[in-house]
Length: 312
Image (cartoon, rainbow, N blue to C red):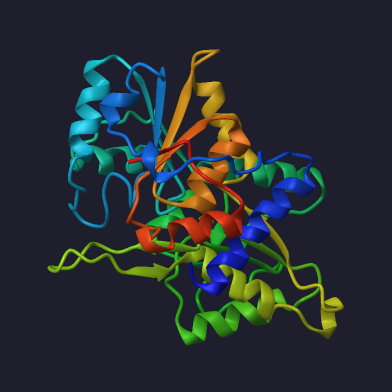
């Protein structure tokens, strides 16, 4: 992992543990535990999948074998969920987009980080912190998530009445970044991280190599650090994270599944999918070579102190 990426995921782990949640230590799980999906079929009742980097990527790109997994599990009558940190639109649209790629998840089977914003806003408003408008950086369609919560995104050159910045993807420019920092240096500022992913894989090139790039979680961490100034005593903005690996999304997943289900989380990222599964009390399977290069896997597991139950 990149240094900033490691620091971000260790921060996430520290935040989770500060809430009194015990993250189980990484056990012995050598690469000899590499399996096929059919080997796991009878072990679990419910299969949760990350979307981007695990089943598909941008556009119409679908990873080899992903459609076979989906068909096999549907045929076997397994419960399936799409658990995504994408906050690029509301769940009904995310489900429809997955369907266009061949993964027919219903809206009820789709749980995104963006869908948690409404609960967070209610919690903040209950504490006297109104969230009516924000300075937004992300895809244009991500504004639908804000609108569903009654939140307005101000113009790129404007400032919201309350100093609140929301990030859903790394679509910043030097101008929007500078404006966001300016807002976050105001006393009482808040940063809403709608997508906590720090790094993500791009579509493999013609040579089959996967290139990874920093995304919204990395942008948000840079903003958090740059918000520290004398006006806020060096503390910086108050930051709220939505999605994997944090507990709220897993509570929503559990409520959607039959009680007592044996659950497997399948993803491509140690710091969100695998760590998150441990927070939820689920087993996990890591797709190797996507968002965790195979030659860095062992050292990354040691640094983060997390390891999946299985490797795919």
